[in-house]
Length: 113
Image (cartoon, rainbow, N blue to C red; front, side, top):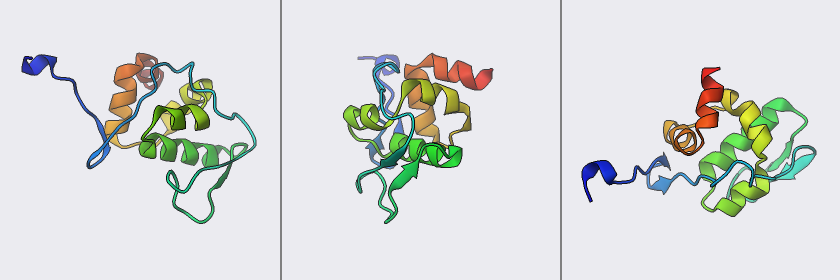
């Protein structure tokens, strides 16, 4: 395999590859209400997020995108349409943003718009 054919691995943080959903349509997590993240995704004593509060929604999405190690975690907590809508506002590590935008150019185009 040539160097140009070597897949790029983006890291959420050192030694943690970014997990990216195959399609945005498979992300069918909650759109409203309160969501409690498991300790593995958010290790703070207060793990409930009110998705009706925009800043809490952003915060939850940032944590799930950064900490997920399985696609089912993404599917369970993220919603594809919501992710597209809030993508430009998310504060994400460079590797997370690069991995998601490489797989889903629609997100990259959303930032450019």
